[in-house]
Length: 476
Ligand code: NDP
Image (tube, rainbow, N blue to C red; front, side, top):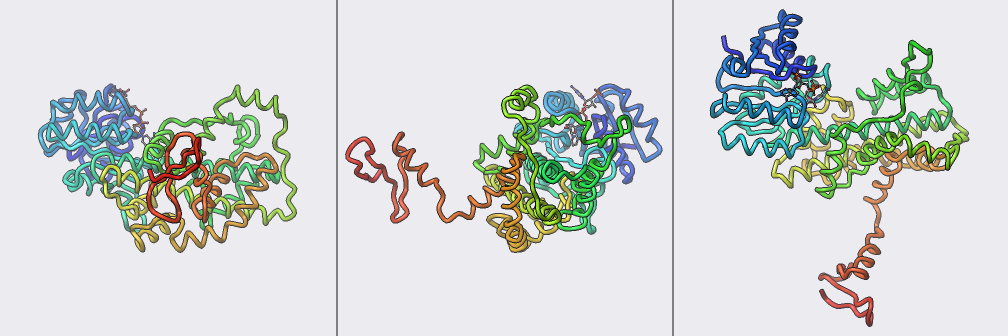
């Protein structure tokens, strides 16, 4: 019997995706460059469903029903191209290649275009949820043609996470749209984690709470507006004790974070599109900073004891301030991420439905959170919302948090506790709502040194002042 779908690339992600498909009743063709992984999958998990293993790519393709659907789950980059090149001569018009790895959306656009010339569907698909999500139900963000989604959609929706009866999978849009949205998801994940880390630092370095106490604080926070997977696992990580030393686990981990790619890609793309995603950018740079060990050592020597802790009158009030600042900053990070999606959608003609994106991020993925229901409601109410921050629910939440947010940022600055994401989010908020921005002065300077011209507040047109001469204004 022919398999309904195939997976090539059977490391943790591919193996678990294949198992998820098989457990949901699909006959799954499985293949890996080296046969060992394929054999192990069938040996260990063959009883879970119908697997059709092949050693060669040709046999793998031959084991699939038509139109064929092949999921590639290999290391992103060159390996993906290598597997595509191997597959293409074996496939026929109408067949579908799904790249479920973490590809850059520009690569996906390039591959989609190339394969379209062969009458093949190339479906760049974002998958979030890590190893466990792939097995038990990830959030799935497929791009590619609507036609391919008609075949793939039902299978993907079957294996995706489900929240309130709705699968966490929707056709995002053509070509690279799915990988773009996955990229922004990861960017938001960076911001979310940085904000959590700053909150922890404020409680730890600021008021001297122990990791165990902070774990309890996060556990409490997880029962309110902040309820989310990341807050939940923060409590787990902070509560964990290193078996070897008996110390808090967080104290024995080297404080140098990695930024493997998607955070960087998000920031690069935002710069190209001119979208201020300051929270995500600060989060990415904060990881870079943490990794500059030698510079940090030199700076510690030159500027000793930067953090003196805080003198806090009301400890509980401070903890509540941090919670509200975290929530307001998180709203900013998501507002910026959804702006980024809107900008990408406009630039590449994807017509992405932001409400649908928030719906499929409610479960399966790393940023899953109660709060995404609110985002969905906001876009349901107004699909062309100018900023998530101005939707009634979020505007109210931000307004309620502003005094706390300011107190926390001031306290952090005074105590020398770095809070780049809290602070820049507040600056973004104040920038966005300012009556007048000093951009007027910037324009004046640009006109002065480079004759870049400016517009006036009181009449239409473009103007230039003769700065070096009589300082008369001319219509440009
Ligand atoms: P890896 O990224 O570690 O990739 C290993 C797999 O790629 C193996 O099957 C390997 O085959 C195969 N491979 C590497 N080079 C080649 C090549 N030149 N030709 C053919 N096959 C090759 O696996 P993961 O399961 O961690 O991730 C798979 C994809 O999913 C990646 O794109 C990753 O970014 C993405 N992803 C990962 C998540 C995670 O939590 N890990 C979450 C979401 C997405 P072999 O066994 O023969 O070496």
